[in-house]
Image 1 (cartoon, rainbow, N blue to C red):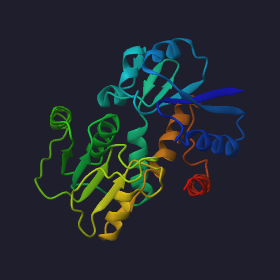
Image 2 (tube, rainbow, N blue to C red):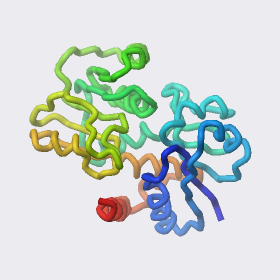
Image 3 (cartoon, rainbow, N blue to C red):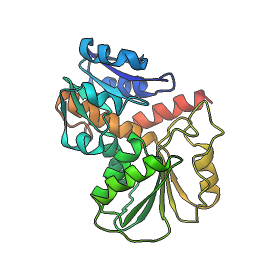
Image 4 (cartoon, one colour):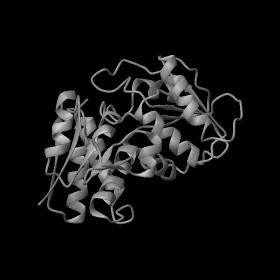
Length: 264
């Protein structure tokens, strides 16, 4: 039996075990997937001693784990964040999850002006994806000016187009609004009708911020599609296969939506 896990802190909110068990059931794989909550001082020992066939990494260890891995794939190295590990090798599938979400929702961001809220690992992965989508511009909003400037410099080295215009696409890459802190919103940016608003948070399914943006006429997308797609991309790495066309992703999404409804 294969063994997988997700590490982070806090970790109770994670739907990754349910996601992967649903996938395992569909493909007929005998495997387990557990939540592992770690303190910062436990990270190194876990990485060196675990006997897992693969694991995911979530907040707040996507950057910290870089120091302990033997190898980083080209995307993880560029993004400087890892959310998937296999055989002491670090990968980033968050950016894949973002692009697959756009595909699923039939959204083309070429030449669009974008605003990313946040400057952590998720923000770098999102910026990486946006650059691959050939967007027109990327602006950053963040409470820390130092981290904001660091991400802006990272983007400037990789994005040739610099069209200065009002953001048409707004993406929240912070945990603000995530359960149990459901009353928090990540930004006071005034969303316009027909803007595209994407939240990387999936619990709750529709954050307070997304609800406000929807009321203003924006097209909203929750983080659930991203969770599913990054998970499938991780499994592709662990099992050296391509499961995107082999799974009933709508069925898996429905299972996760039902669980989120029960948690309300």
